[in-house]
Length: 492
Image 1: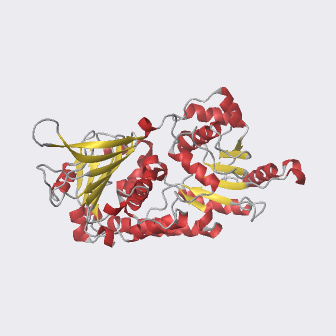
Image 2: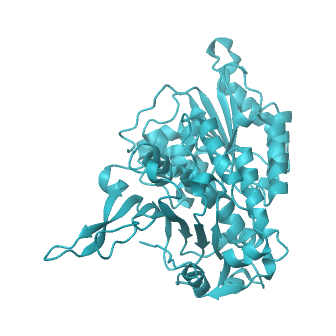
Image 3: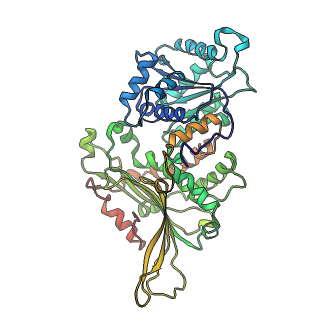
């Protein structure tokens, strides 16, 4: 699929999307570029306004120029595209922390677009969408001010909707996640709340369900009878960069395991939903997350390796026991997955940037040929989104000798044109009111309950923190960790 091939299934309702935190890196690098490209390809509503709220002294044209200069992610935009986008755009200077009265002016702007000039005959009732691209610590005051300013009241409760989209982190443990959920649910219904994990918007992650449930080849084999183990790897070449303060408070486990990795695990391990509705998909993911085996002390010592890259403490300017790498073995307490280990890992400053999921099938019980290797199905999430199925083949020549080759499907090689980014897909779903790729409150809490069984163990900080050199594959102990189970990390 590409932009040119995609057509909206229905006409989109009139929409006003308001972004708080509109001058930050998230808005500059992802949100505004995504909306620019969506507008270029006709994927925004006919009646659409984008209100970007920030504290900088800018006008609307100055704001767009600021974003174009700041962002490193904007693809080529013509003068015509820029002019067309400016028709949708409004920059509003406001500071809800310092001057809540600003938001009464913002409410007036939204109302004016629904009823231009106060003329009832020109009335259009808009969906009101709010994107919190801010620090989660600001959510409480932001939602209260939105409520008191009348911004959460749509012009017709039955005709149009109010929705809110929030970014991770969704808390920093189970207690804080529940507090955040309770806060949001005080002002919004669950069907109005869109918790985003951009990994779920990546094409190959979305393809997980398609590969499983649209092909009769895989689903009959998707169980402990045929699958030996599963690996999920999220490897990064970069260090912590500008996120040093946040990262040092959280670490690799809380930063990546709780959201990206567990969401991918849930999609791999879930049962087939009866229908592809948001609730049925999320019910099946929840069942997996609630079935993750919690950790006690003996399990923690045997199933977790922590590491920190050399130079990390110098980079952040202080001593630290925060892990920048972890490797973890876990199990899912469901009949389908009984006895199947899931190996999960992520790390900073590694030798390559790679996110992939590998399904390792069991060796044939009986093989007629010498050298039969287990089949491996690999979903490469990034870079170069693709799918590999590793199978045994005959080497040409006399006799029968086996070689493991791969059947390959690559998005860029198969589909021409420009592929939509994860944020483009998720923003379109937000505008359309489709929650299938967004995370429900009980999923968040189930994920944190599992993570807390690791990080809030009294022994967690006492476990060794192995140092590794930048540009390597991580601590050697993580390799030994796999060797104990007679396995190796798969990085093909």
